[in-house]
Image (cartoon, rainbow, N blue to C red; front, side, top):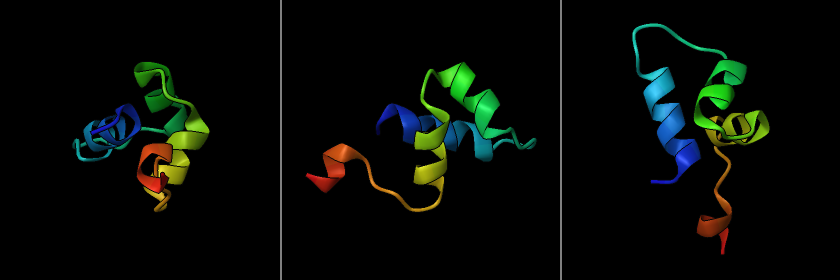
Length: 48
């Protein structure tokens, strides 16, 4: 699992929901990447 997917799993399955900004800062993944993945976007590795 890539970093963005792992960050989303950890952030959005916890009891408290976190903002994309907070997750991005904690995981060192761009906020736009997290948002795109959460809404069904694929990673560059998966697209290739």
